[in-house]
Each structure stands twice: as C-alpha cells, then as structure tokens.
Image (tube, rainbow, N blue to C red):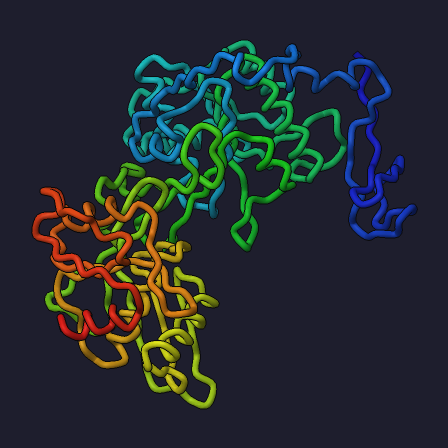
Amino acid sequence: MAKEKTSFTCTECGGTSPRWLGQCPHCEAWNTMVEVVSGNTAPARNRFASLARASELTALADIEASDFERTPTGIDELDRVLGGGMVEGGVVLIGGDPGIGKSTLLLQALDGLQRVNVPALYVTGEESGAQVALRSRRLGLDNSQVKVLAETQLEKILATIAAAQPAIAVIDSIQTIYSDQLTSAPGSVAQVRECAAHLTRAAKSGGPCVVLVGHVTKEGALAGPRVLEHMVDTVLYFEGDTHSSFRLIRAIKNRFGAVNEIGVFAMTEKGLKGVANPSAIFLSQHAEPVPGSCVLVTLEGTRPMLVEIQALVDSGGPSPRRLSVGLDRDRLAMLLAVLHRHAGVACMDQDVFVNAVGGVRISEPAADLAVMLAITSSLRGKALPKGFVAFGEVGLAGEVRPAPRGQERLREAAKLGFSVAVVPKANAPKKAGKDLEGLTIHAVDRIEEALDVARGLG
C-alpha cells in the first residue's frame, strides 16, 4: 500500500498548505496549522471506517440493552473509580503529574489480572524493558508474567496487539507513540490524535481494553488536543502532593460508571495500597477541640467522606487577604459577605485563611456551612464541641439549602462516632433509625440559626 500523503490544515478557516506555516495564508491566524493525512487514496479515505459499525435504523425501544461485562483489576479503589472494573473494548485515559504513581498502579493492576489468567500487555515508550522489570521487583511482583513491549512505533504496537490478543493493553504513554504516516514529532497534536484514533479503533473492533497514560501540562490538564478526552470512554486524573504519601484518583468522565468517583491510595514501599477508610486521612487528630476547626461530611461520587475544614482569622492590614486551599476562593469571599450581612460577623479588617486538610479539593457547595462555622469559631476563639459535623449550602439571602444524599452523609458521620450534626432542615430525617443512634441532629433554615446552635453547644 502506498504511503499516505500529509498536508497541513488551518483549524480556524480550514485552509490547507503542503507545508507547515506559522501563519495561515488564508485567514492570517497564527499557530493554527496542524498536520493531517490527505484522503486522496481509497485506503486513506476508509482508514477510520471501522470506528463506527454500520447498523440499520432502529427505534430506541427495540434495541436490546445489556450491561457491560467487567473484569475486576483486584485493586478495589481502582475498580470503584472505573465503575466495577475494565470493560472489554473500552478506552481509558489516565493522567497525572510525573512521579505520582501512574505506571506503578497500572503495573500492579496488570500483574493482578495476569495472575487470574487475564492476558495483559504493557507497552512502554518511556522506559526499557529492564527498567520495568526492576520496578516490578521493587514492588514485590515476583515472577510476574505480564508481557512487556518497549516500542514507540504505532504500527508495530498494533501488530503486536493483533498477534498477542491481550485482554488489557496499557500504552505508557500516548505522547511517546508516533505513526509513520505522519512526519511530525511524537507528542505533537497530529501524532497524539492519530495514534489515539487508531488505538481506539483497535479496541472498538473486538480488541482489548486499552489504557492510555497521558502527560499533563503545568496547569494540571491533560496535554494534547482536547479531542483526546472526547475520544476515550473514561478519563481519570491522578491527584496528590508528591510530598505526601496519599494519592487520589478521580473519574472526570466515565461512560460505564459514575463521574467524580474517587479512589484513595497510600504510597508504600510495595507500591500503591487502597485506603478502605479515607475519612481517617482527612481528619486531624486533636487531643481537644481547637478553635477554627469544623468537620464537613462531603460527597465524592457515591462515597461520603469526612474532611476537616480549618480556618484562621487574624488581624490584617488595609488590604486583608482571603486565601483558600482546596476550596473555591471566590466562594469564600461570597460567604464572608453573607456572614457580615445576615449574621453580623464582620471580617472586613481580618485576614482569612481556609484549608481542607489532607490535600483534598472540595468543589461542592455543601461545604458552605462548615466553612462559615470554622471561620466564626476562629474569629471568636471558641472551639466547636467534640464530635461536631456540619454540611449544607448557604445562599446569598442567608438561607441554608439542602445537600444531595443527606441521609448517607449522616449515616457516615454516625458510623464514625460523631455525636452532633448541624444540617439543613430538608436533610433532617423525619424519624431517626438505628443507623443514626447516638447522633443528635440540629436542623436549621438560616445561617443565623446555625451560628446560634454552635454558640449554644460551645
């Protein structure tokens, strides 16, 4: 088959050029020319034909739907994020900072799958086979039979997948793979898009579940074209501080499971180990209650977790600072305004610092009530009572709005031995069950009521 020709197309106006140009000669836009494979031959025009199988026009009610068969990896926290395990023909994209543990986790998962007779292939474009073997020995994966291929050329990788027929294939990483059909360097937009499309086609046409490891930018987003995330079935992000032993893996997109589900891992000498009770790492162990601390029951995917919110209010200068770690800074400014307007708590001349313990990032508005209680506690220098938890969204009018799945949050707090909860009135159970024994629930409608309850308990 003749080698396909390449050209360069402008992403703004669609104009073409036989060579790369810094400025499009048609619309004069800068840095918009990307390499594409010309479709002037029959094989080139049809090279993506198998991405979508031909089907007849059918009514939705007449289509027989069945659940996807999953292959558990043996790592419970990873299976939770994936929605139960790997799906045949699925494509998973996992990204994270260098050295955070992506390759380590995937090597552990492949070894576990191979030991239950699930054929696995590990394609490395960044390391040699000897380096991968050395890491497996450090992780204690003795006598591992995972097949390893050190290769960066796409055509050879696809040929190996077709010959070995693994159930799971890991590509580490997609930015190192290149196709002979393109002349651009590995990692370029055209190479990443083309290689990912071919690997996706291999998976969807009865091939293995493909896991793509992706690099991230300085801002933490996945490097390469945004279409890469649209192309795959599942997008996972590895998060965590490299100075901490704990790691979070979060599902940003999942066609086969819940979105925003998280798995928690601890980095040990033998690799990553799942943390069964993640609430323990997000709660500081104080001998006695301290001012400025309030425990929040947050929801990550389907998992309720307890996280300690800490606030420090100190006298500031003419331009007081508002700083938040793990929480939205703009929302912090809004909550301070609500505190002043509706509860009479003024922080206009105070520096306000808020932190979510353990490096967790909280984006849901149900953290509002806990943040405001922590700020008030620090400002007044009075600690909240021991065993105190809170959750609820606070509006600009000072009302406390319900949080989703409030009963599950309360059950998690009761299970971990907390005794007092301040929650929105709509989340208060009409009848306390055995699973809430020992937990006194204070239901509030407005922020003023919540502060009065906390003041009375303190």
